[in-house]
Each structure stands twice: as C-alpha cells, then as structure tokens.
Image (cartoon, rainbow, N blue to C red; front, side, top):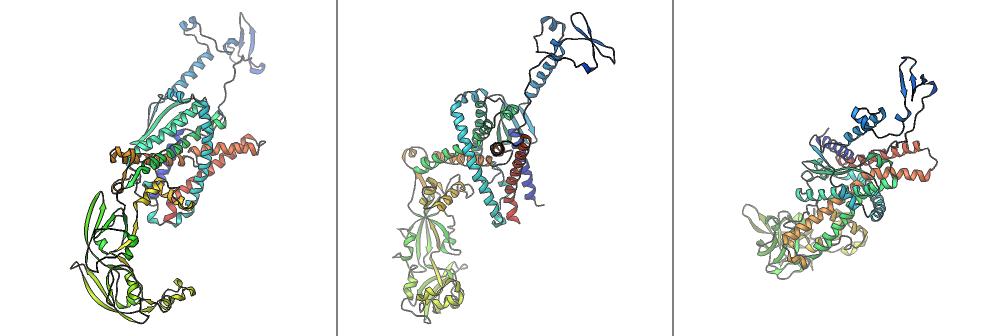
Amino acid sequence: MDEWIIWLLITLVSYFTIEYFLYKKYTPQKTPQPQESRAVEPEPDAGLEFEPGSGADLVTDPETGFKSEFRPELVSEPRPISESELEAGIIPELEMAEASRAEDSSLEEEKPPLTFWGPIIMMRTQRGQKLLDRMARRERLWRAYGSLALGVCAVSMVLMFYLLAWVTTKATEIPASAAPTPDQILIIPGINPFVPLWYGLLSLSVALIIHELSHGVMTRVGKLKVKAMGMIFCVFPIGAFVEPDEGELNNAPKRVRMKVYAVGPTANILFAILCALMFSVVFMGSAVTVNDAYLLNGVMEDSELDRAELHDIWIQVIELNGEPFDPTTLLYMEGLPAANQTVTLRTFYEGEYQDLQLTSGVMLSMVWENSPADLAGMKQGMLLGSINGFEIRNGSGIATALNGTSPGDNVTVTVFEYRPEQEMYFPSNLTVELADYYQYYSTNHPELISSDDDHLRNRSFIGISSSYLGFSDFGHPDNFLERLQSPLLNSKDFDGAMRNLAIYIALPILKLSPMESPVSDLYEFQGPLAALPQEASWLTANVLYWLFWLNLMVGLTNVLPAVPLDGGFLFRDGFDHLLCKLRPKMNEKKREELTGHMTGIFALLVLFMIVWQFIGPRL
C-alpha cells in the first residue's frame, strides 16, 4: 500500500473521530423520564408474612425468620431529614440512595478542564454560559433565524452533494500528478500548502467560534442545558465545541434539535458572504491599476524574452523604444526597427521599472512540417529578416511580402539564427519554393480544410507562424481586478459566471491569495482607503478574503449528509420527519431503524466520494 493511502486513512479516521467526540451528538435515544414515587405495597406472594406490631407492621422472612418493620413512608415521597437523624447519622435507605445518585451525577458532570488524546488537547470550561443566555434573550429573532437556517442548509446540502458526486465522476480524468495529496486533505494552517499559517489560524479560529457559538445560543433558545464550552488543539486550534446536555437534546422536538444543528453551518455561510462583500465592494472596489499596461502572460521558448528571464505572468510591459506598448496593434505597429537591431523594452515588476536591451525581430514561433519553410531549413526561433528583399518589421509584413507571388515561385528569405556560444545572431539566405495553400492542407492536414475553402486555391503558402520578440500571450490587470470586484456581475452568461466564481474561490490554489508582491504592486487604493498605508489596506483585504474562504469551507463541509457532521444529523431528523408525514402509521421502531440505515448509507457514500478524489486519479 502506498504511503499516501496510509496517510489518507489515518487522516480520515482522525477527522471523523475528532468530530464525533467534538459534538457528542449521538443517535437520539429517548431518555427515561422520572416518574412520581408512590408507596409500594408488598405483593401477597412475595414470600413475606406480616404481623401486627406497635406502630408498624412486622415483616417476617419465611426462609431466615428475620423480622423487620415495614414503613411505607420510607419509600414514598422523599422527606426532609430531621436534625436528630443528622446528628445520629441516620439517613433512610431511599434517601441514602438518592443522595448517592446525586453525588455520582455531580461527579460525572465534573469532567477535567483538560483532556488529552495523544497530541490532541480538549479544553473545557463553564465560562461563557452567561454570554449565551444574554444572546438568547431575543428568542423570536433567533427562532426566525433558525427557520432560515433550515432552508439554507437544505439547499446547501443538495448543492454540495451534487457537486461532490459530479467531481467523483471526473476523478479518473484528473492526471495523477494533479491529484490531491495527503497534506491537502484537511484545511489546517501549517499543514495544508494552500492555507497560509497566520491568516489561516485567525480565520479558522473565528470560523469555529462563530459555528459553535451559534449552536450554543440556539441550544439555550430551545431551553436546553449547555454543559460546557471549549476548544480542541493539536498545536494549533483545530476545533471548538459547545457541549449540550445529550439527554435534553435527544428528547427535544425534532424541529428544535434541527435548528440547533442548522445554525452553525448557516452562520459560517452568511458570515462568509458578508466578508466577501466587504472584500470585493469596499476594498477591491477602491483599487485601480498603477499602470495602464498589459501583462506578459506568456513568452516563446528560446526567444529574446525567454533569455531575458521574463517568465512571471505579472510582469507589465510599459514601453517599447519609448512608446506605449499595446499588443493589440503589435502586428501593424509602425516604426519598429529591422531585424537584428537593438530595442529598449521597459517593464514593471515588484514595484520597480526596468529597461531591457533586446534584439528586435519577428521570430518564427512555428514551422509547419513538410511545408516550404521546413524543406528549406527554416527553424523555430529564427528571426525573419526579409522576403525577396522586403524587410519584415512586424507580423503583417509576411503577408505583404508574399503579395504578387504564386505557388511554385522561388523566393529568397533572409533569416538570423542565434548561436549561444557567441551570444549573437548570424544571418543566412535561404531559397524557398512556395506551395499552394489548399493543396498543402489537403495533403498534410485534410481535417483542417473543406470544400468551403476553395478561395485558398492558387494562394501562396510558406508554412510559418511568427511572434515579435517572442510574445505569445497577454493579459491586463483590470481583468483580474474585475473578477475580484464582482465575479458574477462581470460575466456574459451563466457558464462565465460559474467560471469566474470558481476562480474567485480558487485563489489560494492558484497562489493568488494572500495577494502580495508582485500582484499587489499592480494596484493602489483610492478614496477613503487612500488615507491608510497601502500595506495596512492589503493586510485587511487579505484577512477579509481568508475569513470568507475558511468560513465558506467550514460551513459547506458541515452541511454534507454524513454523521458526525451537522448535515448528517439534519439529514437523519429530516428523513425521520419525512417518514412521519408519508407513512404516519409506520411502526416507530421500524421507522427509527429505516432512518438509521439511510443515515448510515449516506454517510458511507459521502466518505467514499471523498476518498475517491484521491484514489480515482491514481488508477
């Protein structure tokens, strides 16, 4: 068995174990209710004989002959203990039992403040109870919020289960190199490579507190007891809990219990939406680009740009030979120097401007196989100097040079080839016999041409693609900023909105959050935020994003229909409620068994789909 499978199993078992002990929400079992005590009359066939005595009946055991007084008041309602009994140390037998049970109960409730499970520490405290009671005073508001939470969790549960199922069907299509690794399983700062340590610790702590505080307040709104509150640590906080009275919670009406489960994930989801709005509208809405210039998102291999190590996609190209650089007009840009001449390229990166001296020229980005250029010895990476004496200074120059030629004509092409030993370009002249465009594609790439392309007949074809200096892809910082400001509104259709939303959520995976240099160097804040230091504004923006991200992950994960997650208990009670409506005459025991089976099936199904994300790509 591979190491990653072992780590996966250990992590999953640990996670579900922690969640199980964290919430202590077991399958509901009706707690026996206390019954009124009453005087118990001995049965006639109990084997005891009664004799009249002074003030009390004498009970004789026929086997031992032992006689004792039977006092009904000792087994009826508990009575206060007299001072004489206390002084003499006499406590009636039943009251002694009641006192013993009360003492055992108090000892059971007094759990230690710290509990150790190997490296995991659970800290319990009685503090915070008054805070819960104060927050629970607005019962009407909290009950309305609980009803809203049931709807939010129901919709989120369906969406998350569908999303997980859809991803499961695509798991085998993911390359093994791109499959999740063991350290990406849990969203724990310092372990997960996508979650930064300090932003993650702060945001995870807030998410856990919001989640469990909501559980606790709704528990008190439902008039249920909260035994303790606390946190779980494994070096860093990995969990928080509010421990309700299990007996009271299990015997509470299903709707009350479901609200207790639902408010935790809903609080995380709503808080995530609030943080996202503040991040996008307040902060990103106040940001503008420092330079209105394009980003160098791609360069050709072995090109001038490649040799200048301009590889980062966040490099801005500001000027070319002192003129503003616009790649949209690069093919037709006038005034470009001839091939093998020096040009100055100004860039902006990590807050600094840099002037680079590069060799100008239209570079061959591709030479088609078996094309006239290929047969003549032209290669990718060469600079194209001229065709039949016509200087090629931009991309449109190739088409201009071939005007007036016909298939079968021989043309002289001047190229410059770079030699790393001398770090220079050396010219050479090649003779190229032009081909017929339609005939070449019909012979070599018939899938790319059809009868509708008859207009390509008798058109000269040389078989090259070009790129000035080796530029291959561009972007603009405004495009990224717009996705951060409103990923849904800046979309033309539903698919585009979903893609933008996916990018918005996937910023940590794309290593774009927290936003730091060189990304943050491209933007500056205006308006009221301009009065703050830029570093403070970016720090706050990053905190808001991570509060959004981790609260969203905690909330959506907890709505999955799998015990011991909140969604699992919601699914259990919801399914039981549905059975009561659809089959009101079903036997209660049978209904509970069916509910338990369905809850277990869905829990195992969710667990399988999670595990499959790691196994499927590696098959």
